[in-house]
Image (cartoon, rainbow, N blue to C red; front, top):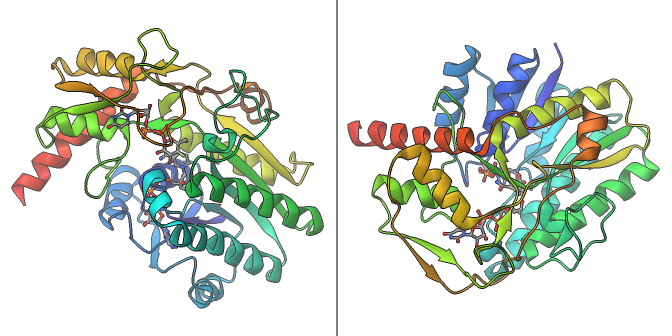
Length: 344
Ligand code: NAD
Ligand code: UFG
């Protein structure tokens, strides 16, 4: 059985990927420092799959902690590197923390892979590397625009580190998946998105408003160039994203990644406005959402959606769930979470 290390694996995308990897027959080891997630994810993964992944609490940016982890498992067949700080606004306030955490973690892993004779690495990149593109949809060849935050910059620099390292270390192979906007939760509602404190992202803010934790959703700007004036993103189901990681690992194993380092956009190819998301949520939940339009959020781009041709043809990946299905799972997760919390 091939052992895959998931850094940041108790987090939102990592926990969903753990489920898909276990279902595909991999042994999963999770390392996380729990700065933005809960150990409860391990129980959720266990409930869904019947398998409890190994969990090690450690910090990927601390070299000696990663050395001990690699020693304990005698290296890994492959690594999926999710661990990162990801709040765009916070990164503007704390650039050093973001550069240190996100880049030192990647460098530590690459150094240990190199020392151990190589391996396969899948990296969590982001559509933030494109900034506000001149033309849409964006392809992997679209030029980078300046990052609008230190967080976005860590993703761009991380891709550069990967490309340059892999260029001169042929034993390491890598794929960066540039995620657009993953949403939703596992259909079992055992795992899902669990932001600590006030959510930054749209969907958890909507579900928390609907469940009564927040008074109202603030929609950031209605003076953008879109049909209803609100900003456009490419939202897709997190379980579909999890499956893209399994396909990326298979591509690396089957040695079809001749380039050594490759990047793929992962989204639906369709842009949706914030107000369209609100309407779709109201439809699936049967509730009226309390919201107000306020000014634009600093650092937000106007619109972005993906050209996913490369992922479709080379990875054999495409989204399977609809926007409504994804929103319904997010809503079911929120409701279950609050029931469980209030019982405790
Ligand atoms: P998340 O915060 O839920 O998961 C990240 C996990 O990494 C958390 O569990 C956190 O505790 C852990 N972590 C952070 N720094 C660590 C460190 N130094 N050592 C060990 N663990 C550490 O976030 P997510 O939404 O699951 O995102 C996963 C990855 O995908 C991140 O790299 C993020 O930047 C990227 N990404 C996310 C989105 C999105 O919309 N969610 C979009 C594009 C890219
Ligand atoms: N929005 C609101 N109100 C809110 C939250 C968000 O109107 O309370 C709007 C935003 O202005 C934006 C859209 O909803 O127009 C989506 O915002 P999110 O914060 O959910 O997502 P972003 O596209 O801004 O950023 C997300 C992640 C980043 C990641 C990026 C690209 O937060 O980590 O997607 O993948 F890098």
